[in-house]
Image 1 (cartoon, rainbow, N blue to C red):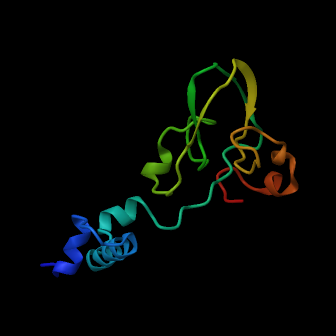
Image 2 (cartoon, helix red, strand yellow):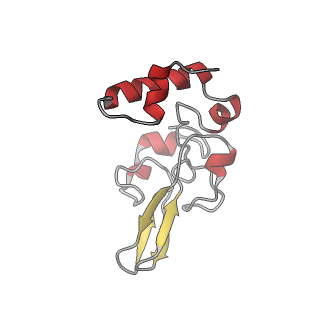
Length: 138
């Protein structure tokens, strides 16, 4: 497919070409091409919802300065940490990456309903979580 000169300008900006025009051109190109089918399958536009991994938090010792990846999707077999299940199950979700500020024991959420991720805030005690089955959506 050949592009008209007005659209090719965006790829190699020239004086006087506005950013909005460039952005519009890129959007037009993407609409023409569409997202390839494999990309749409692996990275859905609408992410899946988290599932209840467990109904109680897990206490872990975090080491100061170390980076952790907390499981957001609830599908990891290495709770409360990510094992990549979100990717292979095509959830569209990503783990929460965080760095421990100090070495200490903390309770990390596994019900995935906390308002203070990755830390437990007691939401697992709610009737909504307690009535849910492990592995089910909230």
